[in-house]
Length: 357
Image (cartoon, rainbow, N blue to C red):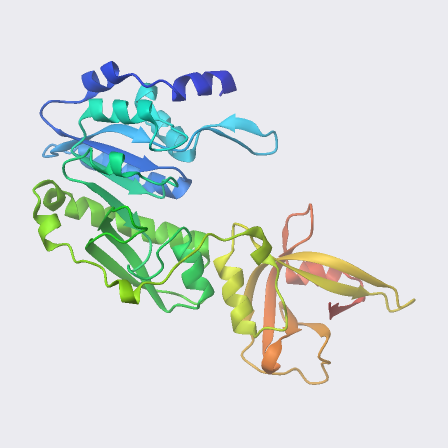
C-alpha cells in the first residue's frame, strides 16, 4: 500500500458519507481498537451485525494513526484498519485521530450519532467529551478480572505475578482508568507454560463472545442497571512494560524468571548475558541471549554443578538460580539469528563451557 495513499485514506473525516452509510433501521455502533488482537472483536461484531435479527451495525472504526513498521519502516495502517479494509469497510469511515479529544474527530463522531462505542485495546485516552456522545455509553473489553490489573499491561503483569486464574471483563468506560461498573466477566485458569500473546488472544476471543451475548442488554439499558461497581480497595495496577525490564537476573528464583519469560514473550522479550569459556585458552566471551522458552526444573540441584556453571541436560540449558532453584531454558535466540532449540545452541558451542555472568 502506497504511504501517501494510506495517509489520504485515513485522514478523511467525511461526516456526510458517514451519515449516508448508517442505516436508519439499525443502531449505530462505533468500534475502537488498534493491534492485531483487537481484530477478533471486530470480526465478531461484523459477523453479528450481518445476522438477520441484528439490531446494530458497525458505523465507523477508530484506530491509531498509521505508523512505520517492519524492516523497511514503511508507513502502515494499524492491524485493525488493515483488517477492516480487507473486509471491504469504507476507508472514509476509519478514523485515525492522534488524540480522541480532537475537535474535528469529535464532530465526525457526533455526526454518526452512535448509540454505543466499543473499545478493545484502542490505546488512547477517551476524554469526557467523547464519553458523553453515545447514549448507551462506551463499553470496554479488558483482559483481567477487574478491579485486578487495571492499566496497559494486564496480561503481562498477571503472568509475571504467576497468577493461577485470570479472565476478561466487560465494563462501562469512565474517566478513571479501567474503573467503570462491570457488566459481566469470564474466568479462566492459567496454564503455567502459556505465554502472554497466546493468553491475550484467548482472553479477547472469550471477550468477543461475552460482548455479543451482552449487547442486547447494553442496548436496552438493562446492562447499566445490573452492572456492578468495582471495589477500588481491591484494585491492582498493571503499568506499561518498558524495554529495561527485559533483562533477567539469575540472582532471582527460577519461578520468578520463568514467569517473566512468559509475561514478556513477544515484546519486549527477555534477555540475559552469559559467559562462554574456551577450554583450550581460557578466553572468556560475553554472549547476549534472548531467552524464548523456559520451565522450572523439577529437581533442585544437579550433582557436581558449580553455582556459576550452566549445564545441558536432555533438551535444556540448566541454569542455577537463587535459593538452589534451577531454570531450564528450552529455546534461545542469538542477535540477528532465528530462534533455535537449546540442543542446537549447545551443539554449536563445540565443547566450550557456559557460566553465568
